[in-house]
Amino acid sequence: MNGDTQIFTGRVSALPFLNLKQKNNMTKFKCPCKYTYDPEKGDPKQNIPPGTPFEELPDTWRCPRCKRKKEKFVPIEE
Image (cartoon, rainbow, N blue to C red; front, top):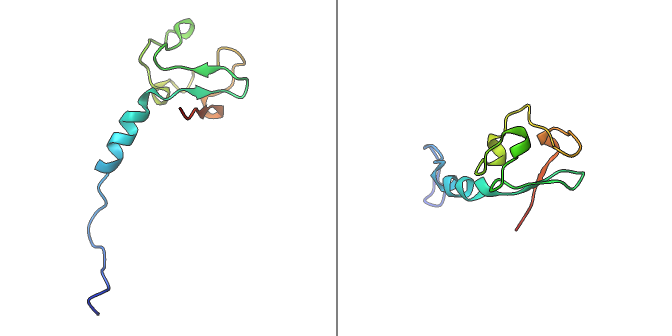
């Protein structure tokens, strides 16, 4: 092997991604029907308290407007 070639033998650390995940915890998500889930407000009608990130919504949660599953929502870039 020459001096220019390097072989990676270690593990990739997830630490650089922690800040990204924490930063996105309060990301708003939009349903195709245009309803926006705002984590700062939660969803009181479905007993979701304020401060609940979209990723922590239960799998049974549905859009309060059109009843679509959360997989249909997309993040809103702000």
